[in-house]
Length: 179
Image (cartoon, rainbow, N blue to C red; front, side, top):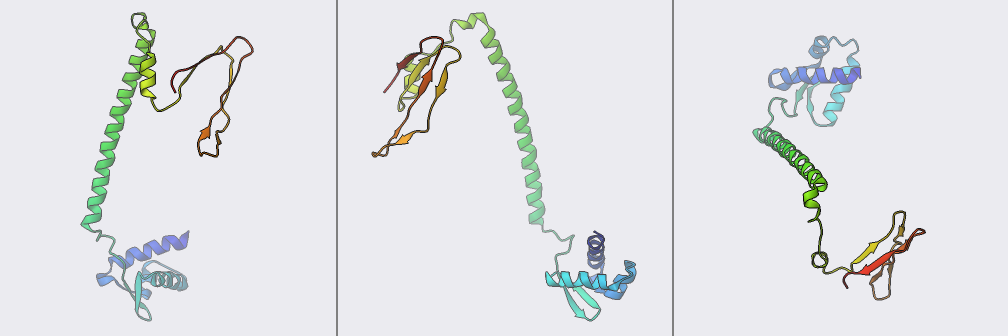
């Protein structure tokens, strides 16, 4: 932990120097480092990753990007992303409000005795919405067990579906609505 903190202080000191050139003896004194070996450990790692280069035995130069020299492109991207986040948050808030409004209206419609007589769909409505599918209507008493095993693939490549219904209290009505 302390080596990481020392490294950050060292890099800041290095970036603040003129032309990015730093004498390691000055750095050790400036950072009040008791063991100069720690400074050499830091410089070896920074040199290994290409952020500094040794000018001579005790002098190094910063080769990495200046911390204040972020390009306008990066700053522009950050600004655009922040604006996009703000816009998305506004849209999310609007959608949440609309969703709450719709839920409230649906509650009123479901409990309104005047509209109860008009809540239905026709056979044609359902069949036209699912014209490519096989539709089965099931009227079963409460407690009926429904089981749909995984479909079996036949030799022709088509899947064979099976539906198992079980009721112990009353008959189950099944109507084929389309084919």
